[in-house]
Amino acid sequence: MPHNHDELLKHVSADMPSDELLQDLGDLFKVFGDTTRIKIMYALYEDEMCVCAIADLLKMTQSAISHQLKVLKAANLVASRREGKTIFYRLADEHVKSIIAQGYEHITE
Amino acid sequence: MPHNHDELLKHVSADMPSDELLQDLGDLFKVFGDTTRIKIMYALYEDEMCVCAIADLLKMTQSAISHQLKVLKAANLVASRREGKTIFYRLADEHVKSIIAQGYEHITE
DNA sequence: TTATCATATGAACGATTGCTCATATGTTCA
DNA sequence: TGAACATATGAGCAATCGTTCATATGATAA
Image 1 (cartoon, rainbow over the protein chains, first blue to last red):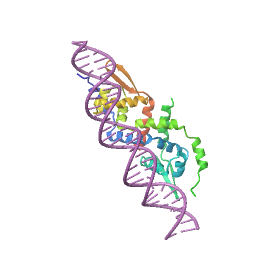
Image 2: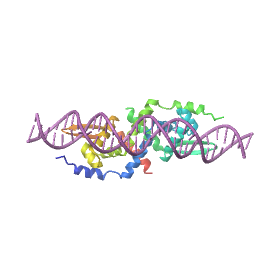
Image 3: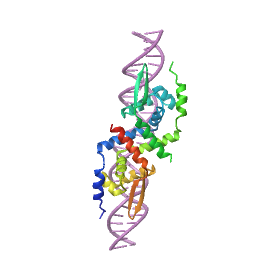
Image 4: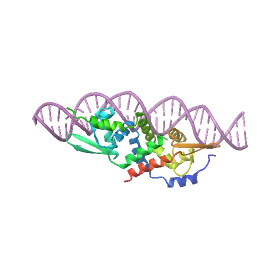
């Protein structure tokens, strides 16, 4: 017969966050899980930038950048302000930097 | 004529990590970007567990869990040890906890 | 050895993702 | 108002991803 771990499961599942929260957590990290978006966040590390500057920097189309900025904004990772025709994006949150920093540490060890 | 941001780009690109590192960083977060894998890592938060216990806990097939553990192991996020027929997995690294904790903070604010 | 348990793995399939292309929206200036 | 610039968006497509199913590997005990 297969081995039993009811005791363990009872204990572990008590400490497990709700499915909804775990889903949100996965969705958040999914946003970090793309090189283009990582690059955008790094570009905004020090200062705000407009969309076309980011596109120039990453040598990608304005459309591609704009789509990704929308994803980042929906996850509350970037915020924006308008100045005339131009829209400037910036990091929304100190968490962005600390999440990236933790990931950086993990891979550079 | 389109506006110019050569100065900014020169400055920002100097501070940008290499493409290879940014790729690795994206790949790492991609691993965190799935609910099943997040659940597995949470399950291992306090103690090691065998594959079938994780499958029981998440009400998923042994195969699905095994595939995901392979992904986690390839990213050096979990480690394993064998004890007879059973293989126990554990978190490989304190970074796992801190990355998840940062993400948790971001969404619960 | 043979039977059983525990885990791993390869192929296949549906779902999701990121880009491109064309076009729309919004702002400024002449 | 019309032209040019800056950005946003919807549809479509190729590529990637996570699961299932069938089966393989590995370990233990009779």
